[in-house]
Image (cartoon, rainbow over all chains, first blue to last red; front, top):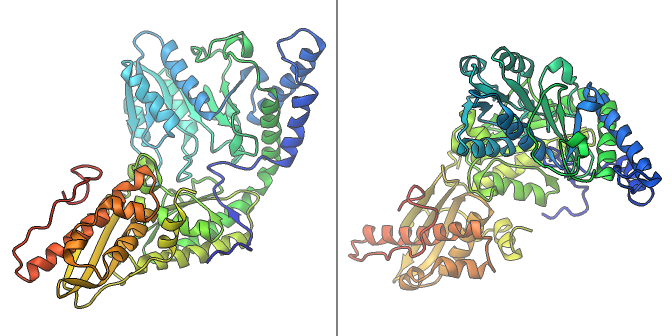
Length: 390
Length: 143
């Protein structure tokens, strides 16, 4: 049962990723050599500032924007909060509507709920069975009272890629700003922020091999949003707090590495498709999300008559790290809002498994995941009082 | 680790899994929407639960509490089984995370439902006591 000698398979990269050795290497000098405060005028400070400038330029180049449009934050959630609250509070009089989707990350949904309590009118767009937002509904809702349209680029649970260019266009036609949470997409798919046309974009370091505790927000030149963190004038007075230089350098390095690894995406897509096919070949299973418009590494499948946390525990024992949308695995005891928004029955949401692959996974991993899942699903179905096959 | 060793032991090696074809009573509680369903089969002879089996759809805690509950009532009298509380099941498992305590309530309910069914089938005019510690709320399970 305890296959302790077998190498563990990490298939939960959408949750977080290990810090890459090259990233650690790039960060280390910032702790004990270039440890100065970039705001200081002396040489210690100025050496740190050089690294900060260079890191900002690197990150900007991976986004396809000007360095002056990149702001470092503490995490993806801060970037989400800042973009949405900042845009809402700076909006012109009469524009008090925020349009988002039902499948956003909680960092977006709970931020919108907080603004709703302040009196903003928040509209949550429906999604279809694959998790793609209803563009007609967006066209109907986007009007001259709309301050912001906030829709994620790729969903963290089911991997669905949104038609973000069209979303930005619709927002702009209504005179509203467009923000996208690209925490899952950045580093996983190729995009250029200027081609997408959004006004703001959030990203996070720890999804792509940088440490937890670093994020960034792209704010298009000319777009004005209110500050979230006031302070000592860092980030051009828009985001207070002494710059976390080691992590900023780490994020820039990880972004650069992620960009160079994008050539590996076809291999990841191939593994993903084989994993999807292997899991969906099991009886009473269903793919969640889209087949085509999907993050390269995301697999999300529901297994009827079994519960996700039990699946997860067994896979963990067998050396596989995955994730589930089951209520029983969450502290809130609520099933995944994303899966429910796609119209999946709640019973099926309880039986969902998410595997998120990256460049570090292999075809052999895929084989082991399929075999282990098949074994665990049938083991749990054998003791399930609702499984019709018993 | 989220669960105690004892919970993981009962989750990975659940005791008394299955059905009893000629059961004296069967109780099913929970629903798939809540994410857990427990089905308890008891075989009663001379007021003693001589055999008990279960089937559970649910999380690790639901499976472990079902398994432990069957162990705690096997060979016991009906009255002893009715006296089993969810906290006794939790204690026997050396604790459950707070959000999972409702699973142990489900195990207590399953036993009571099976005994209630046994009473009904045998024309025994007795009431099964109420489950003391209600779980998630009125929308959940069969309150």
